[in-house]
Length: 423
Image 1 (spheres, rainbow, N blue to C red):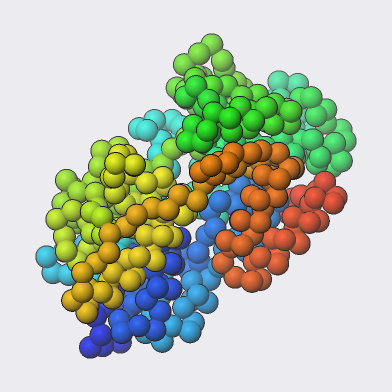
Image 2: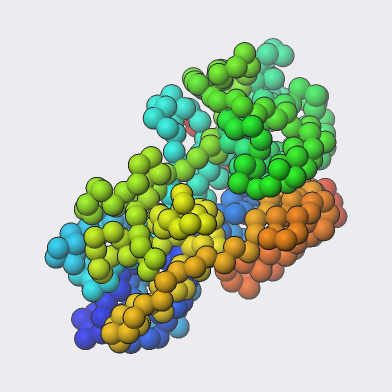
């Protein structure tokens, strides 16, 4: 790997997501050598991936180079690689570019899409967990518009314009709203030869309401907003099969569709080598103690979405969103420095800052501890929080400019098929 030898303790961090980046910053220019490993050379601001897939933003506005984050960190190094296996008994990590020894290992690999064992859906559906996948969805949506314009039959045209989104969590709700805005604002202008009434957006949720982690009030408001935008919401509905053309569900509902976007769940992106008993069931998350140490290991930690820390308040672990990851990354940095100095570590306590979801223009819902609201003010709060959370001043400026332009012109400027998608 060509990492310089050092007398400093070496902390190897696997994953440049919210937790990994916050940990890197917490250890910046301290008496440790930090090695950050990721299969991409950039950090992705995942909450805005849906805007890339719906032509609202270009990918470079929500991605930030990892090397740029650490450029002033004198003892921090980055390596572009995929992790193959951990050998904890040797304090050794095997990667696609070589092996590296560690004093402390931090797993911050996040999650991957969970298809719940359905191979047909895995083969034919569109996941959205990365920038390349978001670009594939963008290309497919725009290609479907083009194909619909030249379709020979009404049935073919409607299949190209029928979008099925599975999963009524924040990702599914926000994407459904964004595609509805494409239908309402872009389709009538760019595709005057198409009838907007032929385009349908279906949001399928397996539970009794959309946004199940949020309050019932937020769910009701979100469903009302989606209905106003023209989205068909189907609760208590599971997808049983999708062959690339036809969607079958556990109800009588069936859809002819060229596009099924899967936002129905995630599973931990675990790494081979640790005791399999440290992984929790279907969630595939590492059981960790209150210091984020992986169960059974003193020098191996897990933070963020891959970590399962059970408490009285969170018996199933903390929510797999940005805030727990950021807070865990910050505290773990402090605790590793305390460990090196042979001081006791501080336990982690999650400070819940609330949850939110946007549905479309002037439409969002926000749940705070003592205050719940929706509508324009919630939408403004959502925009401000996400804008300030982006990594890098340039990204904030670009996103703010794009949002302002889109708001004034009812437009989505990134309608480009740069990389055509083929099923």
